[in-house]
Length: 544
Image (cartoon, rainbow, N blue to C red; front, top):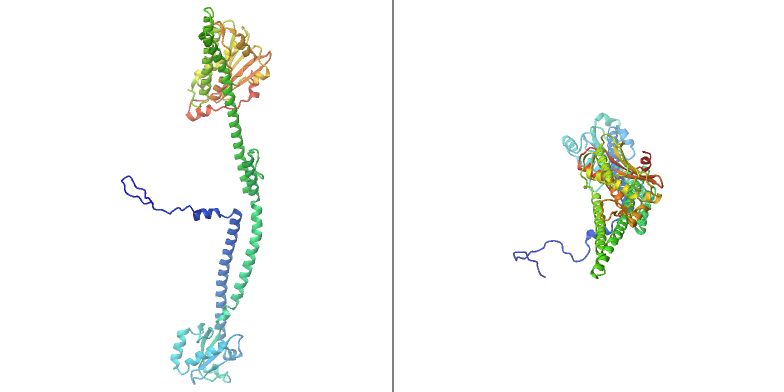
């Protein structure tokens, strides 16, 4: 096996886990990840079991302490009784004595394993001096204080010792010799834990039954709680498989978590659906725009190519050549105008295409009217403008809007038809209005007026016949490209405003442009101004 070498020619050893093609344990673990339902149920059972274990341990410790304290108290109380009382016997207790005067030992209670242990202890003390007996017992425990006593392999006894006087033994001389004596009273130490086994067994049975019940009921409750998530997952799979973005998550709304989740997913689906719809509309517009542009450019290119082929074939006579050159020039100018307007629309689609500054619309309107009167002196162009109306706008673009609108009046109305330019403030913006008293448009043309490359009946007629206009090479005005009102609308949208048109057969045409009257501030506000807004057509139609 070759070892890769570094740039210096030395071998480089790669240190790391070898990959023999087998899946790693981590990948295998991820592949075996439990479902959310199983994880919740497992966590619930584990938490409950931990709680039960802790409670069992605490209960056992507390009850064991209480039992031991109770046993100590009973042993202490039994050791304080009189000799006759001890001999009468208390259930479960045993007692043995050692006469310090005679060294005699014996039982005060009937024989029992506990009594044998106590008797063996006092016999071990028999024959010892009195002081040594007290010292040895003192090392085991203080006077009347319980202690554990274990002799050989016998069960442990919880015992307490006390000394009795000669007077106390006189009343019980039928039981034990009179004189000073030592009495040891005890009870099996196992009595303190006799109930603990039953308690632990009860806790285990109860805990097992509770965990079994929790497994069944918890599985049902968790499944019921996760049912909305399963339905949402089914809906999401349906959307993925069928691509139906109109499908929505069920049980949306409400204050519970699944309702809020469904509402959030539905909101996301709404936005995705709107984005896809907008994308489809945009793609459709691009395709239509490309088709229209190709159609518009094909006609002049065909004309130019035809005349070029005729010239190359020497099919044009000396008298026909000037006319052919004129037609080639006209079609070239038409293509230049079309390309320039397309580039203008492309620039307006960019948010940074405007050069905003404080602009007096009154000055611009008066200049545009003066230009229109100079181009066509026979047409009456009226103005209704305030002394000053200042907005933040791109001055060349606004001049272009006025020129396009007045150019449309000249192109699509009979000579001499009056036109009016109005300016007025409206809300937080200003309105530029250009109206004429011409033949107007049909309802279909009015709806399609701002569409790119759309030309009404008048424009189509101009494309065929031409209009007498001074300044052109042959005394005719080039046919409309169908982009004039589209540029007007794009300029309005770039300023953060909108354009609106109202027209009807025999009622003339009115075009209104609304742009905001804002101060020139930050670039972010300029970018926001370039975004198109929805025009309130009904409200605009009410203005004169």
